[in-house]
Length: 397
Ligand SMILES: *Cc1c(COP(=O)(O)O)cnc(C)c1O
Image: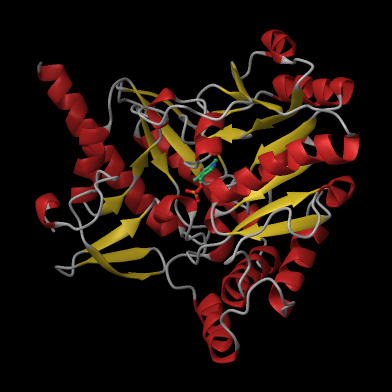
């Protein structure tokens, strides 16, 4: 639909495609054209589109109960919280509806733990340049990118931005008001930049020395995508708080904020809440999703298929000088190019492969966790074709 006819606020610059159906790794537009999906709704549809087991659980739940409010107990949120805490460093879960809300809850919990349990007046959260934490006023303030803040002044106070992967500088950002350090183990929106192990060690050391809470934003990296159930596992650490959303419900909206037992007393009845947080339906989708991830060992699969994808790209793009680097972990893979990639992404879409960018110069690949080697071969062929055509044009210039 043309922009001027749309009754939606123009908050997105949409690709010129109208998608009407999805099945597994395939999407179909309104003309019936088929696409291979290597973006998964931005790391959401981790089991592919309309996964059968999740759909069955959802349909069964739709027959039973949709919504009663959090003033009553229902079985699914309890089961899901148990499953998530059994398989993580966390002991308690708060359910909400999105990544931004999960991070908002994390920030509120960090402040409230300090003010109500420790009895101090600390509130500052250190976050990092190029980070992305969401679009609410607090989480866009936490985000280390100016573009998301334009026109939204005044911003809430209490956020300090430090350079990412700069161990020497970090301690200088700690003040007597600091209550937490918050980071993504891989800054995905920021260009697919992994946290250095030595930098993470320094964060852990500072958290111990100054009694700060360690908050890990796993909204995009969590739930098997990096080759572990949670990306923090690659670093052998246990965050005090971490957050989930994107892949949790296979496309059904749900977010979660998870924390250690010592944080439980910081929230009391009425201190935080959400009308839709953890409805029977959303948690049915999430339960089915996480159960499959665990029983089918999809973290290991992400490692194996991610390595296969990177190896294939290394070979196929080896002679393209415009490609500077191929990097990633598990099934988060980035192709770092020497210039803006918007035109190449449009050309790749035309060839029937859906990919996105991560920052202006990185082509980001996020296939679902069940992607086949055959589909990877197809995708690599399309990307190599488009990027070598670009190389030829550059050579002629
Ligand atoms: C997507 C994302 C968010 C925001 O999640 P929403 O569901 O869009 O609110 C926060 N943090 C990270 C790392 C993300 O990738």
